[in-house]
Every structure is written in structure tokens, then in C-alpha cells.
Amino acid sequence: MIKQIRDLETELENERRGKSASVNAKKKVEAQIAELEQQLEVSNRLKDEYNKQLKKNQQIIKDYQHECEESRQAKEDIAAQLREADRRLRAAENEREQLREAVENLQNIRRQLEAEKDELEERAGKGGGISSEEKRRLEAKIAQLEEELEEEQSNSEVAMDKMRKAQMQVEQLTTDLSGERSLTQKLDGEKQSLERQNRELKAKITEMESSSQARARAQVAALEAKIHYLEEQNQQESQERLNANRQYRRIEKRLLDTLQQLEDEKRNSEQSKEISEKSNLKQRTLRRQLDDAEEELARERTKVRNLQREIDDLLEANDTLSRENNTLRGGAARRRNDNIRLRTPYQQYPGSTDNIATRDEEQESTGSTNGT
Image (cartoon, rainbow, N blue to C red; front, side, top):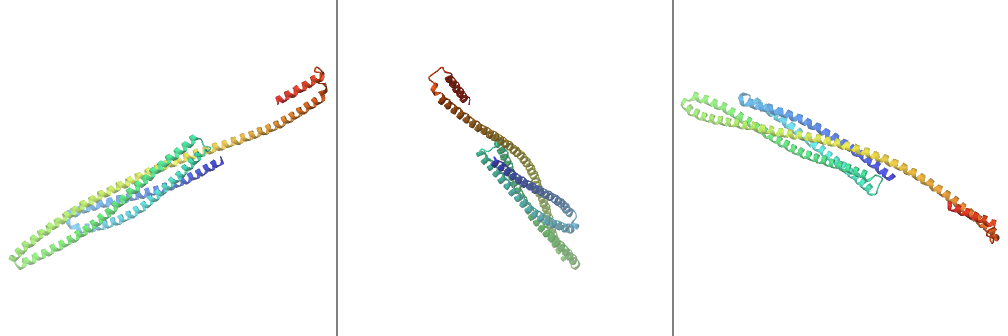
């Protein structure tokens, strides 16, 4: 009985440790949710910046004179976005490490629960003081809690997998942005080269018109052809710029997909929080049941002690009565022997008074013996 009580106390202590580990895991999940919310805010700011960039690109197409300024602003924005993407990558790495630690904590909780279950099974096999129905109920509670912990571990693994995919997408986005920055720089260089060539061609046209009208016509025609070629090239550059805008839109779509994945991660974290709260409630219920079982064991132990005292009292009374009975038997036997020895000479008279008295005493002695 004492061993069973000690086992229950050990189980309660293990339950307290498991609850503390669950609280720590819950705090870590809440911290991860807060970090995801911050990342969502950063993503929203990035989305706004992308929208601004798109508007700027449209303005560049409409107004060629402001193209240089807008391109410079676009490069600065892209650099800021690259820095932000690097920060998001570092944040994703930290979050992945936190998720890994949370999974390890959940695995430790699972091992503790399995140890508690083994102890209950061992106690049930030894035929402890807990009834079979109570044992089955406790085993069912522990099995259900273990299933929920396994489900929470699975959810954490899925969350880590999604986070790795999101990180890969962010890295790809960073690569795409770097390519777009290089393309923008290339377009700026080519645009400046075209502007310089246009200025040079205009200067040459003016010079040729002043020197020779006839020769100038041919040169002008050639230069016009070249200008036409350069205009076509400029148009081609504009088309490439449009393609770059389309690429920006594709990147924006991928960013929206990444934001949606982050939202899914937030919902999964909230579900994990609900599961953790349910687990804590079940643990409290199990603890109350164990406390009730401990009180019931204490009452049963008190009853056993009372019954043992009553049995000891009855045994002592029985020993006393046995000793008194043996004493009475011995005294009656001695008196009967003395009477027989004293009255033996008168036994030849069956009807004598002494024989009658002797028979009466023997009957009394026999009655006393039978009564005893």
C-alpha cells in the first residue's frame, strides 16, 4: 500500500514536470506567432513598396524625361528590398531553430508520458490497490493524451517543412530581385549609351549640313537609318522594360503566395495552441483523479488498520477465554477424580445417597464441559 502511494506521488511529480514543459512549449509557440506577425507586417510593407515601384515604372513608360530619376529610385528600393529579404532570411533561420527546439520539447514530453504509462502498466500487473476500472480509465486518458501529443508533433514537423519551403521561396525571390537589379543597371547603361549616341549623331548631322549639302544627304540618310535602328533598339529596350514589369508582377504574385503560406503557418500555430490548452485541461483532470484515488487509498488504509485492531482484540479475548476454559476443565477434572477416589468404597450400594451425589456431580461436570 505504501509503495503504491509512493508510486502515485512519483507520477504526480512527473505530471507536474510535463505540465511545466508544456507551458514552456506554449510560450515558445506564442513567441513564434508574434514573430510571424512581424514578418507579415514586413511583407505588407514590401508589397506596398512593390506597388509603388510598379507605379513608378508606369510613370517611366509615360514620361521618358523622368526615367533616369525613377530608375535611380527603383535601384534604391530594390537595394532596400534586398536588405529586407536578407533580414527575413535570418529571421526564418531563427524561427526554424525555435521550431526544432519546440519539437524536441514535445518529444521529451512524449517520452515522459510513455514512462508514466509503463509505470501504470507495471503497477496494474502487480495487482495494486487501484481497481481495474480506474486503471483502464487512467490508461485511456494517457493514451489519448499521447495521441494528441503525437498529432502536435506532426503539426510541428509540417510547420517546419512549410517554413523551409517559404525560406527557399524567399531565397529564390532574393535571386530574382538581384537579377532584376542587374537588368535595371544594364538597361540604364544602354539607355545612357543610346542618349550619348543620339547626341553624337545630332552633332554630326549639324556638322555635315554645314560642310556639304550633297554629301550630307547621304550621310543624313545613313544617320537616319542608324537613328531608326537605334529607335528600334530603344523600342526593344522598352519592350524589355515591359517584360521586367511583368517579371515584377510575377514576383509580386510569388510574394503573395509566400504571405499566404505565412498566414497558413499562423493558423497552424493557433491550432497547436488550442491543442496545448486541451492537453493542459486533460492533465488537470487526470491529476484530480489521481488525488481522488490517493484519498480513497488513505481511507482504505484506515479501515484496514481498524479491522486489524479489532482482529487483534478478538484474538486476545479468544486467548483469554481459552485459558479460562482450560483452567475450568482442569479444576473440574481434579474435583471429579477426588470425589471418585473418596467414594469408591460405597459404590457397591447403587441406591445409596453417596452414589447419587457422585452421579449428580459427574453430570454437573459433564454439563460444564459441554457448555464450555
